Image 1 (cartoon, rainbow, N blue to C red):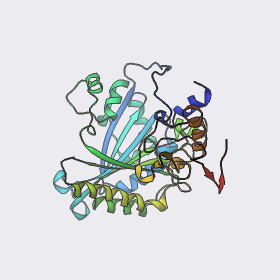
Image 2 (image 1 turned 45 degrees about the horizontal axis):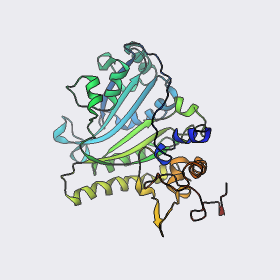
Image 3 (image 1 turned 90 degrees about the vertical axis):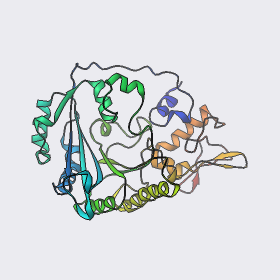
Image 4 (image 1 turned 180 degrees about the vertical axis):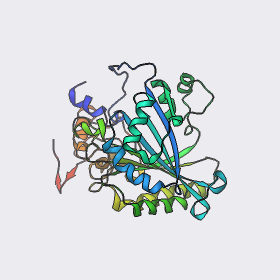
Length: 336
């Protein structure tokens, strides 16, 4: 297929360039019991602010590559828990901990790196690699692991959701975290914090099309989920809440550009448009640069070579460059 196209479809959105019929991959052998997991919840009253503040550096720079600690921040009504928080609601920080190894070693690492979280041996569960996939996909209980994967159903498969994203390059202050908790108490969505670092940061920014590497502490996902049976007004309110939080976070996240995670496709960032029958894009000056940074221009060059007529396209595909769809950078037309 050519080196450039192979570069583009690994992290640049293969749907922009064609239909991938098969991948040839190299497998890695793992032992039958290879991973240890723990899910811990800590409320605002149990020190959620201090714990999340420390998590920002511990989970991204101080733990080995084999250990991943993800945090979801959500709110529960007072009837859903024994302890109430401010405004009659509870802030809940849910830590999802995954370790490539046995639980005894996980306990040692957590005691050394993040003892404040208070993880205990009874909190750990060992499982196979394939079971870990089910665990992180939040599949419903009561179905054996392989059947869970074959059913292709998770908690998100029967609902509608909106997700926006940001990358954080500097730790948020405790005051900023408190402001986030306050907004969450007044709204209904989940604040997902996924640590970067490790192998992700070890790969150079231009090695593959996905550019968000070294320099990022973690990824934020602003996730609102609702039932399709809700009224149009209620569904619109979910969207408003997520967008308000996104606007609130502007001073605290990456900028110039404000980076975004391509997997969390966000049409608020911009869309391809039709003009006189031709497809136009502002991709490398708006959403394309947010998703792919300086790699966006190379992606457009690859697109121009393999699909110059933009046969494969949607609202946010990479588009070919031609006379009717010029691209500017720093005030000058880009030519290849």
